Amino acid sequence: MKEQQQRIFNIEKIYVKDLSLEIPNAPLVFLEAEAPKIDMQLQINDKHINEGMYEVVLTATITAKTKDKTIFLVEALQAGIFQIRNLEEAEMASILNIVCPNVIFPYMRETISDIVTRAGFPPVILSPVNFEALYNENKRQAMTNGSEKVTGKPKQ
Image 1 (spheres, one colour):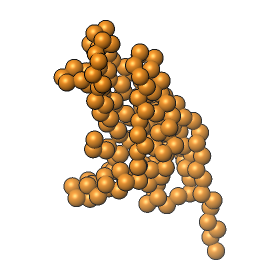
Image 2 (cartoon, one colour; image 1 turned 90 degrees about the vertical axis):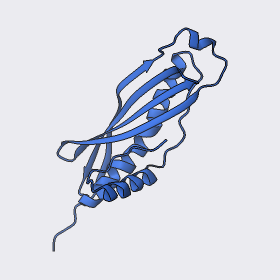
Image 3 (cartoon, helix red, strand yellow; image 1 turned 45 degrees about the horizontal axis):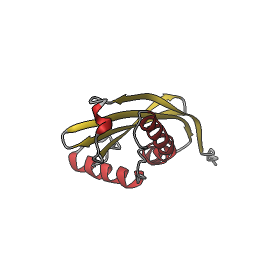
Image 4 (cartoon, helix red, strand yellow; image 1 turned 30 degrees about the horizontal axis):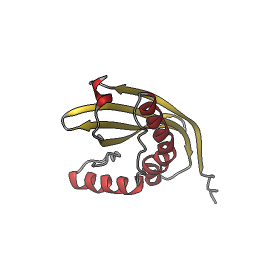
């Protein structure tokens, strides 16, 4: 009888892979009285990097605008290296698109809030994201469109 191997999920490293901030209309934007409208775009990418090791990158693009003027634009790539072993192929996609982003997201929230505050603006606190619902919606759309790759890209 074949003994089932123990399933392994470990967080090896969480890090900022890339971070950029643009304030195209500075210094005049600091004189604006109107509160900006915040838009967030989110994307999930994963890559097999070694035996049982995966990198998951959560990319957020935050744009703050008033009327037609961009106040600031932040793009943050928060990443994690995860050791994942002895899982069924069907489970891997949900682990990489739900579990790993749920681990990474709080770090991304802190990174974005910190960079926006350091730029001289009030902190931007990102609302929680339901990665399971996002994954299921993208999976449904991928099946409808005949695509096999499911990515985490919410509509906002």
